[in-house]
Image 1: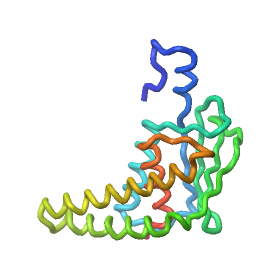
Image 2: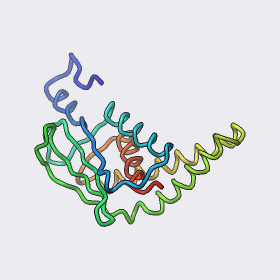
Image 3: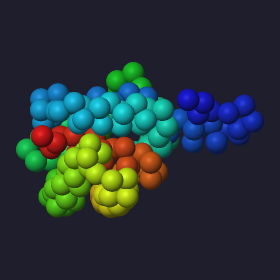
Image 4: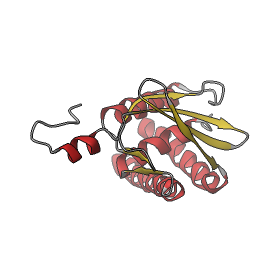
Length: 169
């Protein structure tokens, strides 16, 4: 988890602080989880904390803490400086995500069923479709946040997984 390298300039070191060091999901907002879903959540959080790029517009440096919740069908990004100082909240309507999340869940179900019984070629086909749908969801997230929070592709993908976890049953 080396984010600030020895040979970096001051500007590069400030850039290197633009990441999340803590993420919490509002337990009251989360859908009840199966073992597979709980595993997906834990992996997404772990991967996100290991490597991410997260730059709230107007913040000169981080690192940041992120608290995610789902309030009245709106996704709330509560962004804070490491240590808890509030920077602000970003509220996103879940409406643009509904179709993609529904389709993603159907593909995930098919994938989990396939890994238990299907031939490798069938598993690979379903997995490619699932990853494509996941990419589409992360692109929607980046687009919706573009004037509020800048994310790289991997951070957007992991955050999309966490957003889905508010709806997984």
